Length: 27
Image (cartoon, rainbow, N blue to C red; front, side):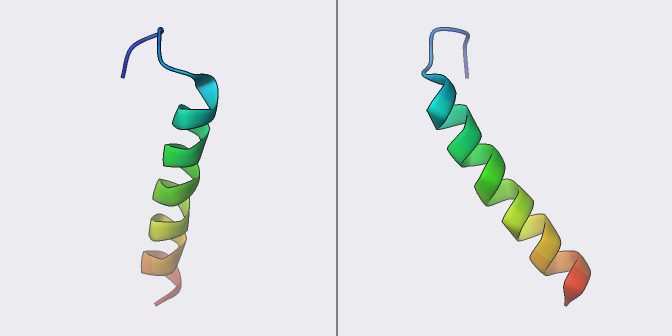
């Protein structure tokens, strides 16, 4: 990802990654 990408795209990817991480540690 580059600085030219829309911030909301980065936020959406971060949220998905965080949910995946939380699912792994809570399993």
